[in-house]
Image (cartoon, rainbow over all chains, first blue to last red; front, side, top):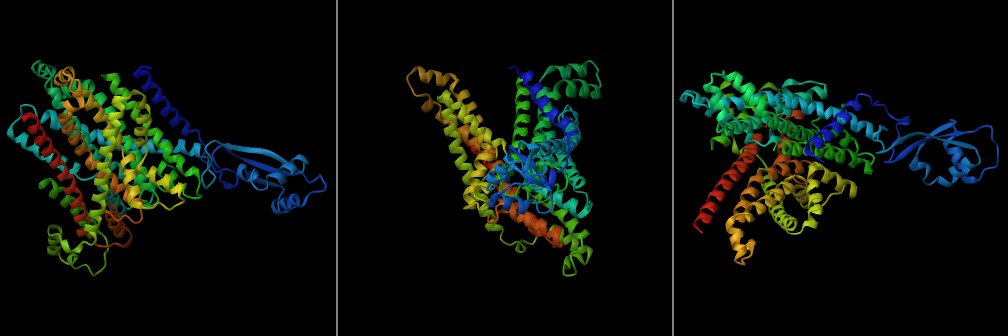
Length: 337
Length: 259
């Protein structure tokens, strides 16, 4: 398949997930029951009108479950577990009526929420958080990158060169600190100085700071290097000789014509890193991320109880989303090449 | 040196501001006068840190072990992928694993052994090798460089003379491999810091930093010096690696040119 179609197809998958998230109900299943992958919830209704002789096992099952109410909700694991024979014979004798209430392809979490629905909502929330960081990093990163690579670096005075040196020193200083250290310092700053109670706003603040501080610096370095490589091309000099203003050259010849592909791939890379970061900071042992908002991080942390294969699903799904984003980047590069 | 000192002191400045703004109790003497406050900002007390060297040992040993094993595996994978076309798919699948989060490995082991992930240092190293994305990146770069090196004229000439191409291109490949591997070393350090946060017994630099930050958030402790030295060590390691990679590259290039 051509790279162009692959990019379109992969983008459609992500857009569909985001659109679907607005139609998903975040409600809990009946009685908040935990269900394994490919499991269902059944309702068992006792028919009071039938009075026939029951075996001791059947009597025990009826007395245990139907002493207070006529209907019980049971998951497929319990239905086909120890009491399988008793339930089967009771259904055969028409004492119990079995009806499937819901089917959960990837099971549910410990609160009885369908994991597929939660993953769809989590994808939307994670993408929103990541896009906030991307927005700030692109605005600042592009400004500093163009300033460094074009305005201060093109036949300018020694004074401008000194400013450029100071800027590049500051950016190198910021990028020489590991990203996780910045993240922890920003979290500390948010907790102690900004002091917001809402965990979503707190995480948004963390991502804004991280985007406009660390990722903007990295992006500015990439843009600067790209513009310096463009300087070798003749069209910039030609545009200047023809009398085009610097602003027009920046918008029409640098941003519009040459930075589009680079900005797209860098934005997608930042989104991937933000998804990974959100999972890291929300993880149970670190606990600086989201708490009440549904995200990959909160789903992963929430899956620790009860201990089951369901706990692996959100992190695998997040990995698949990141793989899709990486595939978009690589196919987009191939398309532009 | 400035690239280490400036960011470290900038972070010290942020922690200093936060510590001034919170109520740390009356036993913090340096907060009593303005002069002492400024003195505190510019004079780090090296004796205040505790357990930093042990943390450094844990972090560096896991990082270096993972890095060396990763180089070894990447060389094998790139060799297999280059020589045997039918092995390209399994190699790609192994590399695709690195798309998952680092904590995927921890969760998998936690699920498999119901909460008991031991020995922690071993599994932390395995997770860093296979799930930080560097194995995939390193192998891809190695394959690219094998292709690039073997398409050069002197290698083609050597092959025509009956000399083994691996023997003829060995020196150039070693230079490129070492340079690329050193470029990725900071990623291993960052991955180790993330992984050690979730392992209870691995008290490395990342864990120590998290502990200090939690102490400020939960108990309003003064941790200006402790955080400064932890961050200082982390930045120093990354800078040293960068300087070392540049040095190795220039040294290898000189050796290659002289041959």
